[in-house]
Image (cartoon, rainbow over all chains, first blue to last red; front, side):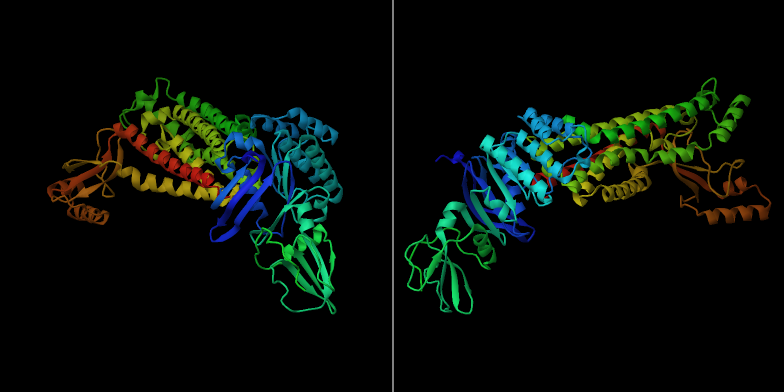
Length: 301
Length: 328
């Protein structure tokens, strides 16, 4: 695989604001063509990571590479390959939609005005309306149309649906997925709502306390993890370092392990885990563990 | 990118152009009526108020009566270079930060340094152009006044020549920098106004008189000088267009006398029944004046304009540095 076949690579990436680190030791490799969900609680550093990826911020430490180029270089070439939708999808509110399209044309190397106009016509968004007079859902759609008209190879969206009502949310997701299906671009978006991701994403990055705690293709991650239920025990079960989380009820102990499957110890039952529970388990973990899966070994019991 | 800059700032451009045009129109009307007082040109009456012909004294009396508001109006016009610069500068960065649109603007295919260069270049040039247009109309309006009086008075010096463009560029840079630091347009405007007034007061009040060492004249009081006044010396420099910094009396050794001492002498002269001038002459009292000759006008303009343009450049460098560092 050549470097350009990675949509995104970071190595030891970190960003510090004065004395606090918003992001630390972030090392990721994401192949092209994925739809990547970046998940984490508010303040985990999601926006910081996305701004580093699109070149709005420069790293304090480490490197970031998008499609083999450094976004921090801020050249027209790398900028034109990345589409970005910031949180709250900011637009010039006193511009008409037509003005925004004009701006897109005058500020980009390639800008597919026809594509944007067709998308907006499908959504019945009038071109002569001021952006500020549109509903929140329509503004998000306009911002998306502008970002897609750049024909980006990587589309980055920061909490694109956070401010939308359920209907607008669904419409936005449909528009986004339609575009992905048509163009095959790589999409990276952040969210703190897990259920909506499951249907659309195939790659996951979990960010917690400024660090990446889990990253990988969702299918692989779900296959590597399983829930083990057995008799209650308070002994130290994590001899092999594969236990992500242990919880205890009166009679049972439930373990979330990352061991890649394998035989189960007597008295223990293995169950698959859903994406939402998996994410929540990693978000609940107080301290940092290695992102990479440890060597698979037998389950304790 | 130029289209974006134009579309974003056209409202301010229209408003400020309209303001400058309206001021120009008013000055055209008022200036024409001022000129009509001097059918042979104001230069014919520039000899002085006292030795002018009848026509000249009438014209100058009417000038004082009908155009006495000029001084107040002109001091108000001192704010216009600020308005021009600050209203173009304050929203330049601050409005993007306020509305979050910096993330939108700086992720198009225009690198942010180019974005900034276009904006600063276009709006800075516009600031200077509007200030020059304002200066031109004020200078035209003031022509009779400039012939009759010194161009070094604040009414004239602050509104003519090169300095108004310098003031406007300084206001532009101060508002832009304040906006980039405070991230909001309105507080940026307020901070820029404070900075503008402070720097202008310091420069005009303290720096300008000391740009170059003033010339001085000191001479013994004539025994028969009827114009002598205990309140202060009215010694002439020989050119009404010179800028008088200070004047007064001094004893034979050259020590400056206070107003109190001069008044005491006047009282003593009256008590002795002698003319004030004769009394002073007898004691070897001298009159002195510190002044800048009228021909220093353009050098002073150049130096003061350079100071303001230099400050503007430093503030814009701060803006460039902040945006280059990506602290937002």
